[in-house]
Length: 262
Image (cartoon, rainbow, N blue to C red; front, top):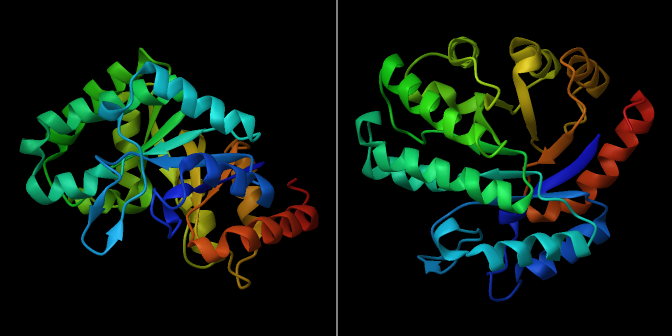
């Protein structure tokens, strides 16, 4: 299994640490991939400067340059994360206001294709709505993403925020839409049993995986086994703070050797 990490966790501003330098830093640590956040700008807003990329600010040449910069450091950009959805949902608390949101998801799909990314983590932030509203948006988004050979992975751990139940109902939504471009981005959390259950509930609907900081109390042998049963052997993407970037690589490799999941 390959390792990637969310680049947006760097504390430095984009001006202090350009993406190209971040790529080199991550490659030195041993990562093979990097997940980039899509967010409207990289300028100061309040206390912290946000790190991310935005489709509207990147023409085809800039996209090619970014992909090449990652490759020059031996990195892929396997996934994107539509982090703009959090802010968007604050202005559109219900799914009735997600017409433009749907367009932004499609723009992210085009960007993903240009960068060589296979999957995008999507969600509705804190927007709530009905089953039919959610299904209509997701079905249309998936149909558009299919054109670019990109998979939209709704994050299972935060699906409940839509007000339609837990991850088990997201499984039902994926089955009803029945598109190869709409799957589930799994983020197992909690104790061993909870993480295994989260993966097994999704099964082969999984398209990508987020992981929090490694927990010494979790039996990762069981977690790896659950992933094998689901047929998943792609990227393990760490969603951790910058101070855990390097130790997460070392820790995962030790676990992989111990449990035969290299």
